[in-house]
Length: 278
Image 1 (tube, rainbow, N blue to C red):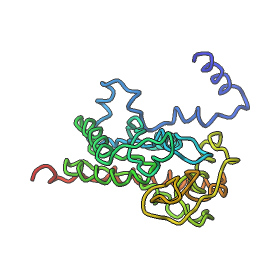
Image 2 (image 1 turned 90 degrees about the horizontal axis):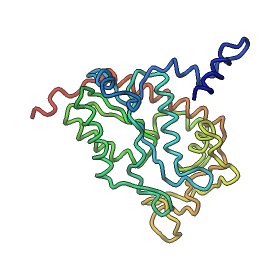
Image 3 (image 1 turned 60 degrees about the horizontal axis):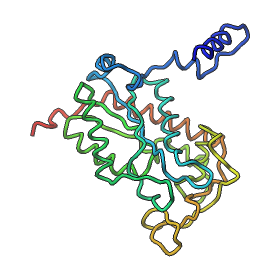
Image 4 (image 1 turned 180 degrees about the vertical axis):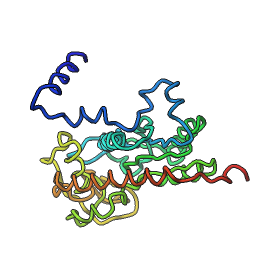
């Protein structure tokens, strides 16, 4: 609103006031959000050399008693902002429904079938690629999502499109092992909770954090002791009580660095010249 803009202008001009990083970042942004453009502006940005980033994070998926259902969406939005501030990319709107079969016993969790999740991404990419871009990167915050994303990459590769995505288990390099204290776990655990304490501490309730680190079993998480999968009454797999903001900073900054490395690699990657010609 205009009143707020005037206040910020006065603060920026006043002697002795430091520039707020969030405000400074607006003018320093390198990337652009597709949704902010007109179609004519989009036509200018969606060139053959463009790298299109598609954030992916569940808007409704259980994350234990201490994290909210939109945890992955919040993480995707944060990482999107970091990418926009640094990389010359076009960022498409965030996808907030995908392949999450492991959490359906917990109310509020949503899920698309494998083929639906694959085709959702394929159709989105093809609609944008039709106007020029040949390089796409899914800023992925999930683990189960890796399977349909790999399937999408195979389909799109046949179209001559370079399609890559974040492997959230590997992108931070050795940062997770550097700080990890829990014995096992990958969901709403020490690592994920630490990341959220750094990204959005107001959305974490550490008084409700728990440890549930039963041995892995085939299948997803289950609320039934005798059922198939990993038993977890809370929906946590790991030890969320060990999470700290300091650990989160190490992991998140390493994750951002890994994503930016992925984007640089895709920028110089060449589509398969033989695709679609067989």
